[in-house]
Length: 214
Image 1: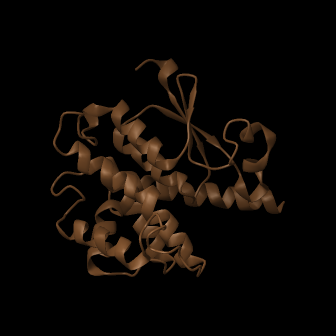
Image 2: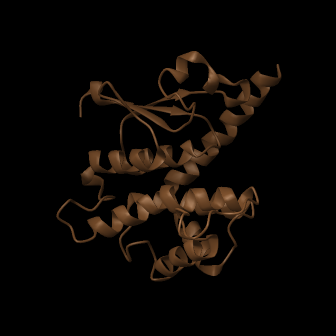
Image 3: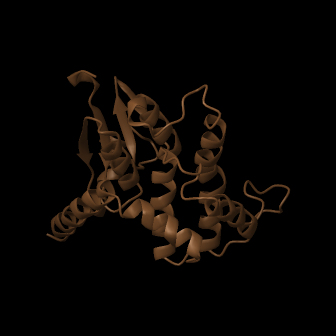
């Protein structure tokens, strides 16, 4: 990749954007941070809304194009750096299961945990995108129990996404701390890339809080 191929990550500390940054670190990808102070409301300013109308991070800029949606970003970045070994190739038998479980995060897990957290009644099972909360979570737990990673012995970008997501949702009591979930999350959060990003986020979040308060 050339200097013009550097990835821009629109970012705010201690948000779901941290997962995308951890992935970039795992991939050894060249990237710049465009940091938004969400405590000061910078994600709702016209400059950023022109880039992502939803005002959400992570958002990625690359080769003159914008990629939004966390699942799309993870697939895109991992495919961009196949030498890192975090994505099955198109002709790899694991490509289908990889796409299944990475898409499951956005299509089933996220709407389920938001409904659960907000204590909202889900739609009838025939209309719900995730059937019901317990069924959705049980299917994930059964897959992870085969371990140590989603696809068995092979670590992929999907594990970075899921490990961080489970770490956060267990921290806030949205997902139960089962042995399967906690062991899996620890395998991801103990990795150097996660530790580096977490330490940087603590410092950046403190700076944002001081700026917003001052």
